[in-house]
Length: 388
Image 1 (cartoon, helix red, strand yellow):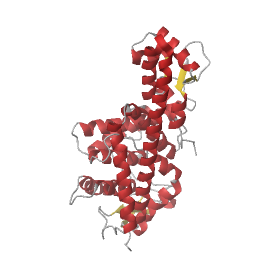
Image 2: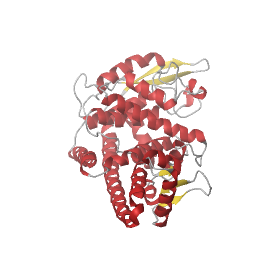
Image 3: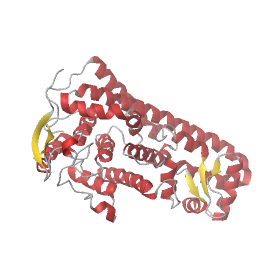
Image 4: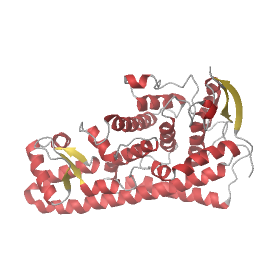
């Protein structure tokens, strides 16, 4: 299906130059999506994979212990797309007040991405609608309150021009709407999120809304990460995925060039169908990978639990630590003691047993404040996480 430019260009100016900015047309696309048999089959497969992933929380014992790690994996991957160097282990070290292996600001940035998602989900579960106000709150949590972030106006829509690529609007790869066009763009965007003027199937809505948000680019910074968080929030709001176990950013990171090319192609030629095919494939691949990882992690934990049962009198305390490590697979004796209610002396004795069984590995060589990781658990989580 051939469509025209999905919006209009307007003339804008800075003190240095005149340029053209792009203002997207409201959603849904016109004419409507051409649901070929191939595209429909892709979406059906993606929906089935999402349903299986969502069902894991109810079907598999201890599945909720995985949420801590899965949320952080998505935050790390989304932040990698924006250029941070923090790994999953770096983030977990930062969260227990240990020094990560990268600049602290990278780890802090990823930690704020986690906080932003958790804030958005908490608000939705409390009955707050998916809205512009919620997106501003998510952005505020993402950017943070420190002095460096103040210039990025956390929680506020931009009041000046931004651009993507290049050194100025005149040589940019893409120039989003001028600030004086934002209000109308965002008003129409919010209506679409809330099924006005007519309902849109949830997975299709998430795909279309992501492109529209990235095109509007309503914040001075953090638009890519908020746009990817929006997918998780949309799926939760519409009941497709109750818990954020999907890490779509892995697929987006691996297919980064195609991802950005398709976003631009939609704007210029209206080829929504190619983007929807890519998005459906990303959901199918990511949901299948997440389901497989979840099953492997739970099988590993069950196997290791049986090995711990051989410890005799030390079994109970080692089992308590093992359960905590399934939720937060990097810790110190102090954090594990706080989480289990055991004394640090008991924790240290149990860690010796778990090291001997090959379950945990010390990451430091210190006499005090030693850091331990659930070795095989972390290895499974790290699959696909290599820095670009």
